[in-house]
Image (cartoon, rainbow, N blue to C red; front, top):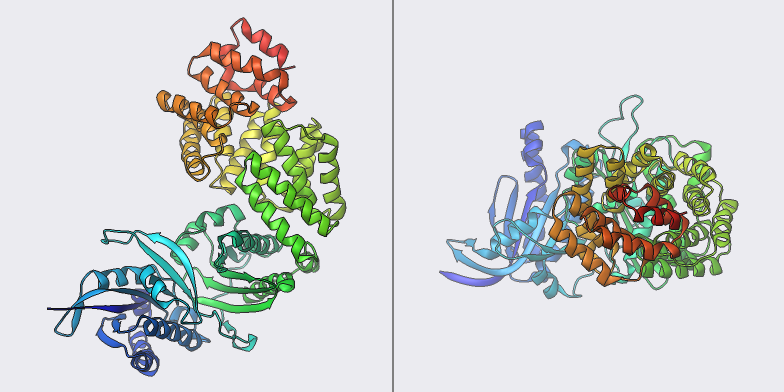
Length: 621
C-alpha cells in the first residue's frame, strides 16, 4: 500500500442524464471530442495523471496544487468558448472540485478521504465553475492570477467534518474584450402574453474585505430596481433573493424555488478607484449560460456598468422597452460616486434595524447629501431613520424635519417609490393618516414589491384599528421579506383581534423562527427577543417566554418599546400587576403611536375589565 499527498481533481458533466435522454449519441460524441481536443492536452501540459474516466466525468491527480487549479481554470475558460453558439439544451458544462489530501494508491487507482472530499466539493461547484478546499486555497496563495470567493465551511455528505470551500473567479486578471463576450440564443421565446421572469442573486464581494460587502449588495439592489421598472419583465424582489446570500446553491433549484426562468449572478471587486464587475445570465431550466461579460472600469463608471447590464438583459430576453422606461433606467441616482458609496453604507445599516444602526445610517445619508444636495434617496433615508427612531425608540426628533426631508425627496424625484413610502411614514408620524395612506398607494403603484411601503402601511392601519387592512399589508410585507420577523410577529396580534386562531398560531411559529435567526446574528438587539417572547406565550411555551422577556429587559431596560412589549408578555402570562406597572410607567413618556397601540392591542384584552385599566386609558389619550 502506497500513501502520498496529492492534489485531487474531480469533474463531471452538469445535467448528464438529461443530455443523454435528449441525444445519447450526440452527447457521447461531444463529450469525447471535448476531452480529446481540449481537456487531455491541458492535463498533460500541467503534469496531471488521469486516474479514471466515468461516463460523465474524470478523476485526475496532480503533484502540484498550483498546476491543478491552473489546469481547471483553463479547461473551464475553454469550455465557455467552445459552448458559444451551442444551443442551451445541448451545451456540455463541467463542474470541477479540487482538494489537497492524503490518498492511498493501489493498482494505479487512488482511494481515501482525500478523494471523497474532492468529489463532494465538485458536487457543490457551480456549473461551468471550479470549487476548491481551504487547503488548496492556502497552498495556491497569490501564485495564480485568480480570485477566490469564500463560501464558508460546508457540511459535505459522508464527510465527518466541515470543509471550507472557495469558488474560483475564472476571469480575474484576464483581459476579456467586449468582442469575446459569451452570448447565445435563448431556448425559446416566452409564450404569448407571458413575461420573461428573472431573479438577480446577490453579487459576490470579491474585494477580500468584508467591509466592502455593502457595495456589492448595493449594486445588486440597484440592478433589481432598474429591471423592476421594465413592464415587460417579471422581477423577483430584493428581499426574496437576499435569502440566498452567502449560501452555496444549485442554480436550477433556486430558479425552481423562486419560480423564474432566468437568474443573473455576478461579482464585484472594488479597489481604490477601480471596480471590476462580472455578470452571468443563466437559464434556470437548463442551468446553461445565456450571456456573460466582465467590466473593468474606473469607479466613476459604476452607473454606466449597471445601465449596460440592464440593457444587455433586456436585449437577451427580447423585451421591448417603452420610451419612459428607457428614460427611467438611464437616470442615475447621483453623479457623485462618493455620495453613492455613503448612501449604500447607510442603506446597509438601515437593514440591520436597531437604534445604534439607525443613528449610523442617518450620518451616512447626511454625508451623501453633503456631497450631492440633490440625492433624493438620501433625503428619504434620513426621514426613515428619524421616523424609526421616533416610533421604535422614542428618540426626540423634529416632526417638521421628518416631513421636510421626505418632501424634499419627492421634490427631487416624484417617481421614486421609496420617497412616497418615506413621505407616508412621515405623515403617519404626524397622525395625518389619510394623507399617509394616499402616499403608500402611490409607492405601491410605482413598486408593488417595495417591502417598506407595505410594512409602513400596515403600521398606520394598526394605529387606527383597521385590522383587516393591516393584516393584508403585514402579510404582504412578510411575504416580500422572508427574513423579516417583525411583520410576521405583528400579524399574531392582528389575527388575534380578528379571531383567526389558526392564522395566529401559524404566524407565531413562523415569526419565532425568523426572530431566532436575527437574535443569533444580532444579540445586542432586544426587539427580536421581546417579540419572540410574545410568540412563545401564544405557542404555550411559558417558561421560555419568561426567559426571552428577561433577556430583552437585560439588553435595554430603559427603552419604552421594550417595556411596552414586555407588558404585553406579562399580560398574556397572567402577571397583571407587572403589566399594569410597566404601562403606567411608560405611557407618560410614550408617543402617540404607542398610546394608540395600547388602546387597540388585543394582548391587553384581559386587562379591560379590571379597575386599573381606566387609569391606563387616561394615560393613553
